Length: 425
Image 1: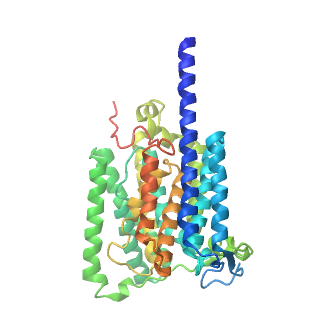
Image 2 (image 1 turned 60 degrees about the vertical axis):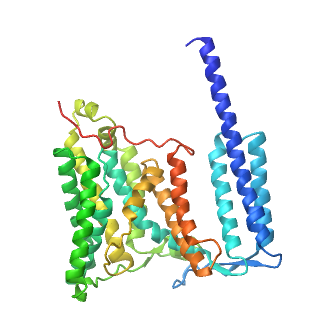
Image 3 (image 1 turned 90 degrees about the vertical axis):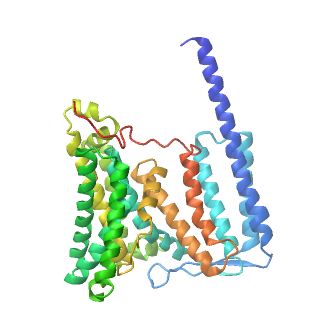
């Protein structure tokens, strides 16, 4: 590379860095302006925001309510974010820019909560707890997608697998009165659909989007039909037991964290365990390296002696098992009975969380929490009668996802062979 080329490349990088610094600074400034001109100016001097620190029905890890002056808090937060914006515009935070962006967004969210609860009471810990519960099927659905697509197979059928798992778990749990048999049945029913998807897309090389869509249509039609013909007239087939909350000794007594993280049912604990196991398995083990190599470059993996077809079958079946477990959450861990189309697109939202999370377990988990928080906050705003529509709040995660996919936060990298059938030479 010549000296001239190096100089030109350096100038391009420098201009890009300056542009990013200015853009991020403007974003920080916009957040500060919204907090000051929209939130702070709409509150009165004497108003206070009351945050409840104890979720309903839980007595461990409780704290007294937190009462703060609304307008003063909003003004203080707006000044803090404005100072961050000024520093970003004139000096820049360099490699810490994304971290500061995260801090600014958290401050903005807290400012919004303060504004929404001005003159009222909002159960803050209840929102955090609801966030975890609402994010469970989303995160598990995202993990299902990560498993399948790491091996190079697109699994649009996660929604259908979750729906079938929800119904099967309810029926088997109701008939046997054994919640564990219901859970196993839910997982196996989704694995059978995953096997169908694997055979169609891997062996017969059917377009993977079409195969997954067929599974979704089949699962929706079959569960709706069985619900109308069997579950509704025979109510005893739709009354499964529920997994109870399990308070972890000592940890459940920790203020704030105890009620939110350590006094939940097994689905929540399984979500965190799956996060750790998947992250380590995919990026720190030989198994994960083989799986990802099949998703990135199957021909090279085949050359090295890796059975591409067997690995892809395994990935899709594991994806189905995770989707079935996610579906069981609805009937065995949350609602306690099956309703038609009760997954309500959670499988598709899980796929969006997977993409937003850059096809990694940690990223998918954080994206799932974002969607869960939006759902929890939207429900709370509806109860409080806030002027801001909860439907608008429900839109925000999708807007953020589109911005992320457009390349604002960073480039999303799908496995190179994702969705492409492999032809063995």
